[in-house]
Length: 139
Image (cartoon, rainbow, N blue to C red; front, side, top):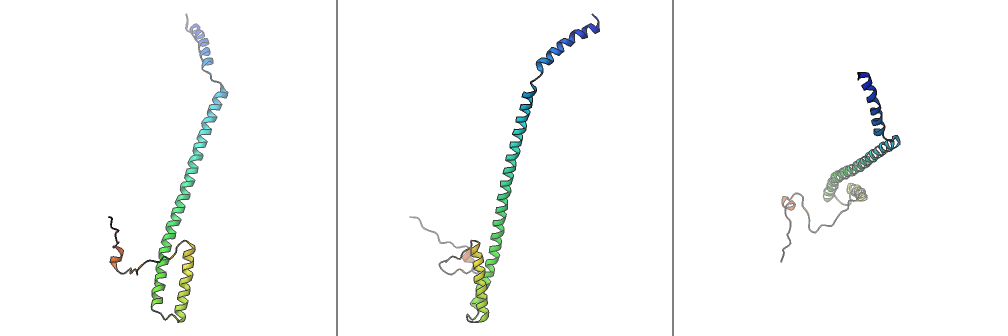
């Protein structure tokens, strides 16, 4: 046999194999569509998680900033208290400072901060006051 006749014989076999391997185009398109749909769902879930994480970080930052500002404003309230201790309660300045203190406390209370009654007097200048805690005895 010549090379040409061998090639002619091989061609029909190749066509038969190609027909067997050929996949239904609709099934292939459906599989591809499912793959893309799954990918879209994963991306949507990732985006939802990102949005939740960003919202949580924003709330944490806001709480931290608010707490920091509250601490700064409380030191001003303490300054007003110290000024009022040394002023004549009937003087116009003492009345004005007391009014400002009350307004500032209203603002702080509207943000969730409230004054508590602590037993005994706390002296922030006494270093022992920051380190001593009365322990409850078991027994």
